[in-house]
Image 1 (cartoon, rainbow over the protein chains, first blue to last red):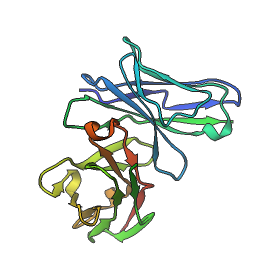
Image 2 (tube, chains in turn orange, yellow):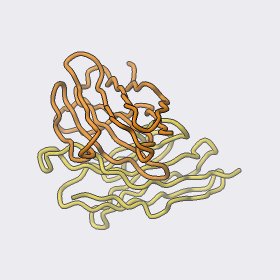
Image 3 (cartoon, rainbow over the protein chains, first blue to last red):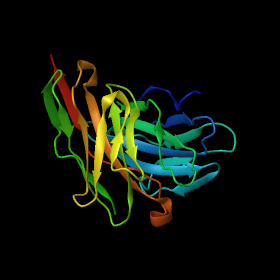
Image 4 (cartoon, rainbow over the protein chains, first blue to last red):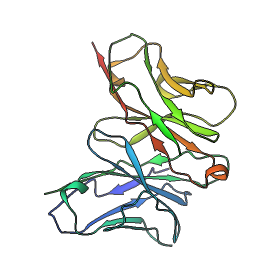
Length: 115
Length: 117
């Protein structure tokens, strides 16, 4: 049973470009979460999605950031017009979303570097 | 709102010595508690979790943690550490979806465990 997949593992962008990060949840999981880890800090929640729905985006910056989880295909975190402060590790997690459990399983992360 | 405090940013320890990594949380509702480990340049791996029931929770790699509701703590322990335990350890909390309407995890800032020979 494959775990959570993220690609690319490393992404380099110049200021002003777009970054697109992909996440494929574990088989059977319909809930996806995105977190950001700045250097020397813990993970901060960004957004929680189910198929075709954004459930909680309280941690998303108001501008330039968007996320989707289409009916088919991976979840996408999109950052437009990247700035140096966007350099971080972005982690995706998934869960089955069943009542009584909130265990989230994490992918290996995408490390974004903005030059 | 929920928050997690990991009191020690770094914990150096000698191989085969015991270790305790401290975690305190605050929450106005019942919580689920987790410890994750992160090896260099890797994702987070679940060590153990407390959802309900017995307050002493056993996890992988010989780790265990005890939920103490009165002290709002969930400290992680291992009786004898190995070099391979060197990593970053994160404590995290979430509330039940029914209470909070949210599933997001709130993480502490992490504790770097450095096991020395």
